[in-house]
Image (cartoon, rainbow, N blue to C red; front, side, top):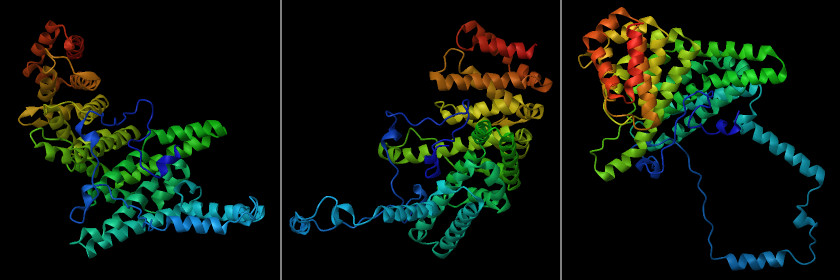
Length: 438
């Protein structure tokens, strides 16, 4: 595992080869040339909490005097291996200091966590950071500048939890045992959306299949099959503990909390200031979808629970029906919907019964497909999106009720038109008709 991830959350979880990746904004995009400004007292949540180191500058008007004094102090009598140039320490003394320095670093470096006692201390700091931040928010509710430091500390402790992925078989069970899962999920309801986003990102990383892949690799290297088996057991325990804390409901509710749409009608200055915030919200939504995919992959039963007990399907249909440039999140939503439909008959029935602005889910999918009657998808992202929508249609048509809705929505006529145009949708339309009349 990349040690750098222990100090700073990666932009995306390092998943398996076929795991979707968040792509950084291109240089020519407006938001890529902007940087989020530091939070001020009036709006602590406008940027990721952080602390800036402060260095007091020394007066610069004494440079000449200092140079003279230094020259006089180190006279020609001082040899290169003498007291001043050599440091005045013996080899044994240097070794002792090195050992002391390494001990201090191990106490503060998250990457040094390799046993349960050290992990327990780290989790204790995490709990204290949560309590301290809650206390400061209540105490200084009218003055955000007074609690922004505690928020930065909480953000740092959150990111330090990534060390759990280094030894899932050992650390995950202890994390659950000490109540860490409940505390972590609770942060999804934090008043600061940036803290909620950081917690979501950590959850996505902890539940990523890559954690098990690393355990499998370690098992092969050590020729110990128990490592992989214990890691899988620990992952299931963690996922179960997270789900018991209503994780699904909180993840879906956060989808509407973040806004990744930049209104093109905004004035240029306002759009520029809003662009970076929109970009950060887009990443948060992407990590929510990634966490949901991880949960579905780990627990197939979650797929039906997600559709039946949360408004996730309505959110996806609204996203698909909105006619705007296809971005990563819209594509990811379509792909995730295809996965949910492919694995569950109840989910296919639910799509047919779902309503969005008076239309059924089948009508929404047909409306998206109709966009490609004469126009081909623009770029690889949109092409993948269109493929996912066609896959959704094919999956839903295994239900007799959805076949009826497809016919009532003039789906056959639309497929015929797509075939006549001899463009992108031709072969996909044939695939849909084959699903309709197997």
